[in-house]
Image (cartoon, rainbow, N blue to C red; front, side, top):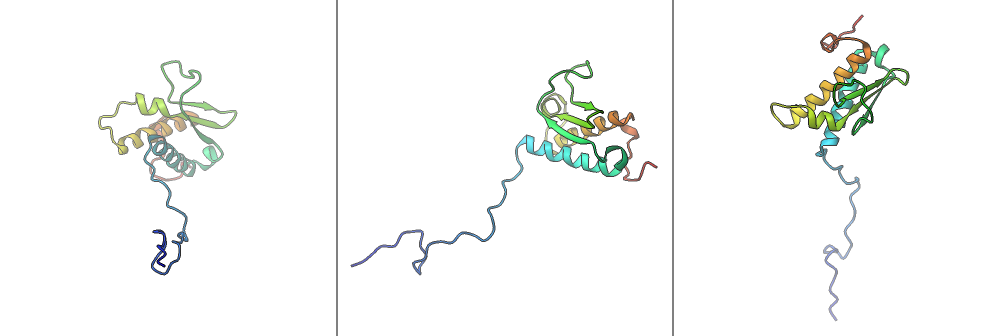
Length: 138
């Protein structure tokens, strides 16, 4: 009598084995994923450039602002100095920022730019006065 093996068995009659490593992570392809990575990278850079001023400041992400802090339109970020937090709003940054080229690089630059502008406002500085050379401000 002939017994047909299941297709999942190899030629020795064993079932297929799972890989030793876990399955690979899904690629970051959603806009929200790329936005959060961009803001986190800019925040890490700023914390390194200003460890005393921004070392314990939390950079948070939210979709939309609940209320308007600046009063001149939809806010891209809000600052709470007492709680030492900076909140970057994803939807206004992604939807209302006019890009001359709408690709991943320019969307990342817009997210980083808003993060730098928010940090400059938190520090009471002009964004152009932030140390972009990686040197200590002291």
